[in-house]
Image (cartoon, rainbow, N blue to C red; front, top):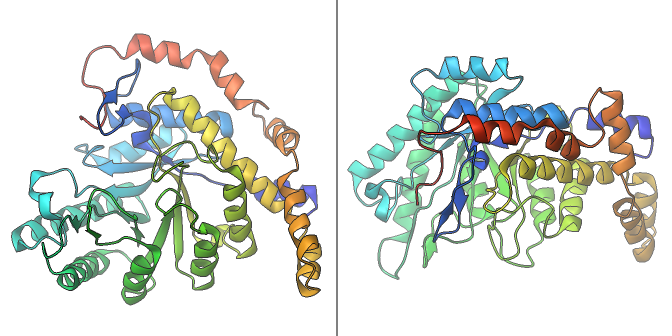
Length: 388
């Protein structure tokens, strides 16, 4: 796509979901670092997320994490989000922070613990019903630390049983997004360690189960764009958790460590039809800002994703296909590099101006005084965070 008008039209369809936990206190596994003005309630998290959307124009939804974002009235929370100009998006389940889950949640050898975990997942579907959410994202910290600790195959059976129970509870328009993670916190085996495991379970579950790719959850050197292309081809790519990492799961701002990788991923998304809203792919951020300010960190990440998408849309597909058919290795690579090396910032600034937004969202937010205001107003109470 080289027509700039068409590129702008496509970019106007972009939507990147924000994680509520990105606005809470976070840190390393050793220490959580507090910041002034951090939200104390889910409502304050949503208000902060709305600021990101107000300045970027492409972050219209907020993912919730239950029970981190638990409230008595979820319909009222969804109404509050609408008042702020955003909506409640994906519901994330948490079956990893209770003492009962020391040996796992849905794969735990104790049937009572498995029942507790499944009950929580079903309660999350209730939250989806109340908020109008389409997607339930499931990540399991389940695994083992030692050989022989538990039966590897039996744990997969237990996982499959739990996933079936959740799928059977979904409304027809709702979906499971199954997330995988290479390692951590389990040291010997992880029950959903890779895209193949997630894909196999989703394949058996049917159309209402899709794989979500977290860009940080891979071994160094993994070709993530191949995984994306494969899952798109199979119709099993349900969403992304965008972040960036230097080692694994660092949860840095997307595009911070390897912006070229992000471009390559977005190229495969565009090439595979995944950028079309009808494809139903949920583009989400999943990151925590430990040493940088929360809201500017989210704005920067959204802008990085937007820039990578714009470059992917600028790939001359006709020239690329011609070079590929001719076996022109260097020519084909040059087409991609030409798009990647294009400075799309003037194009995006022009797009924002046309849409009534400030051409420079970072500078505009800095001038707004919002951070200073919430630092003064949000005094007292318990700040949201990991609690470590």
